[in-house]
Structure formats: structure tokens, C-alpha cells
Image (cartoon, rainbow, N blue to C red):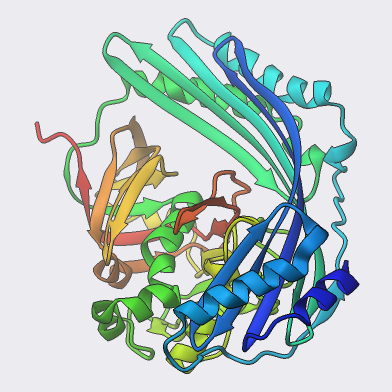
Length: 457
């Protein structure tokens, strides 16, 4: 493959060109209630050529590798029609590397389809048999094995294997007009055994859905809020991580004025990191989709904004260094600036330290939805517990957290002493590319004066 890609790139008359080819094998199994809704397995091969001329990109996608030279020429011709400015594209040292996925927990490509179905079916049966108020379920298994070949006119060539396996477990409970949902998921790149043996998760999901039927809605107001590690990670990713993606900063003058390096965004205890090289996490790759090595990137360090995430293009435009964050969902898409594994780093507090002096507060867990608009965010937690007189009290539901991300970060006053990276499924969406596998996590985090929506009786 290296010779084929290198030979095709010799036909380029652009200032820069690259080819990415992918072979993608996927299995997907979905149960909805008692019914097996989907079971399929597929394989596809495709690729994309990108060419750069005077700051303009030309693209050509393909499923047939027999005429790569023509696809390169097509991309170059398109780029010449677009380019109108001086090229800005940061230089990086070209690498030549080939990687094999270790799959320490078993190669799912060798597992019979019937065994994969059995994993999902076992969890689905547990949910449906749990309680008469369980109305339905949605349990899915999926795996993807992606082999990527990448080459560019700088001389880089990379072969990478990217496995991903996901088990999603969801339950819906109903009592009249009261409908409650609960879910758990597990995902990663270590192999098939990662998603086996999760019958206890299915029990937890079913029990939580039923328990939420009788849980009161939280009363709206301002609270001291403690977030669990999963909600901490989602907050770091959704509310702050996207603001740190340099294409967003470059294209929004307002955010350019706000996201000034060296500006204080929190107390000295606050550190937020994106690390594409962290071993064993779902967003980890040795190189991004421009052939740039991934690395640990501090976004906030000791409360100060110290970095942002870059592609080669945004790095050049902002006069900074590439960070290994140009990522693509698949061969049909060009790489754009994306997060990898984003987390808030640990502090020194125990969970008991965080709640012992809270007269009335909220322990918020997980997330079921939300949105961000510039620096404003709204998140719906999956469930939570009231904190009363320094103790965890009753289960509550319908928890909506809202606010300004910069004010919220300044109100973080305690960080737990352990960072967790929940191996959850799902993924990040941006620019029509979703769900991109990412990792996120953090410790328990205590935040003062959080606006919580709910009932007002």
C-alpha cells in the first residue's frame, strides 16, 4: 500500500497533498424490547485525497483504489479553484510507522456473530424481567475494526489499526404518564472481553429506571453541586473542550478575545488536559489523521489558560504548534480539530471532604443530554441525590444544570483525589461527523452556586 500511495502522490502539483485509505469492518446488533431490531455485519473500503493550493482545500473521495492518480489530480484541480490566500500550514517532521492493535482482551473479529448476539440478549432479558414497570429496553452491541493507511507529500507513511467495541444498555420504566430512562455503556479498544460479563450493569440500569419513577424532581435553585467523574468528564469535554478547539477560536472573534492565553479561568487547583497519547483510553491514537504525533496538551494549568487544540492549519494561522488533534470520523470526511481524551485532573480532597460541610446541596451523576452555545451550557444529569447536613440523602430526578462555563470554572473549589475514566460508549459530534470515539473523565468536583432547574413548589 505504501508504494501505491507514494506513487499516486507523485502526480500532485499542489503545494501539499495527502491520501488516507481505510478498510472498515463493522458488526451491529440491536434489541428493542423483546424484538431483535438489527443484526448486520459489513465491510467497506474507501479513501480521501486532500490537496492544498494557496490556502484552499480540494477533496476527492473514492471507493475504488484502481485509479488513485486520477483522484489526486481531481483534488489538486479543485484546490486551485478555491485557493485565494497565502498557504498557512504548519510544518511537522514526517513519520514512517506501522502499528498493530494488541487486543489484549480478545480479537472480536474471531468471535461468532451468535456469541455477540448472546452478550446483548443476556442484558436485554435481565432488564425486561426485572419489574412489571419496565416498559421497554434498548440494548446494543457494536464493534468496528478500522485499518488506516496514510501518506502525504512531506514523505509520511502510517499504517494504523483502530479497534472499537461498544455495549449500550438502556431501560425505560413507566407509571402512567411518568416515564423514566436509565442507561449504562462500556466501550474501548482492548477487545471482546471488555463487553462481556455486564449482567450486573443491566440490573443496575433496570433498578435505576424503576427507582426514578418514585424519586421527586429536584427543587430549582442555586446549590453547591458535586459532580461524579462521568459528569465531570462530560462537562470538561462539552462545556470547555469545544471552546479550546482552535478552529472554533479562529472563526469566532468574540471567543478570540475571551480565550487569551495566560488568562485566569479558575483557582490554582484547576487543571484541564486533553491527552491523545494516554495509554488504553478510547480516544487514544499514536498519530492524528494528518500524521502528527498525539501528546498531552494542557488547556488550563494552575487555573490559567495555557493551550488549545490544533490541526496543522489552525496552528499556522494562530502561530502555535500542532497538537495532534486533527481527527476524522472516517474515510468520507476530512480531518477537523477534535478532542481525544479530555479530563479535569485530580486534587487532594476525598468525597467526604466535599460533602461534610454542605448544609443543602446536590450530588449530580452522569448526563443524558445537553447543549452549549458559546460560553453558556445546559446539561441534564442522569440522576442525583440531595446532600443534607453533610450526608447523601434522597434520590432526585429531572436535574438541569445551567450557567456560564467561565463563571462555573471559577466556582470550582474542591477536586477529588482520584481521576476516573469511565469506559463509556457514545461519542463526540462536530461538523457533521458523529459519533467520534473519545475519552473523558476526572475526579469528583465541587462547584459553588450552580443554577439547577427543577420544580418550584
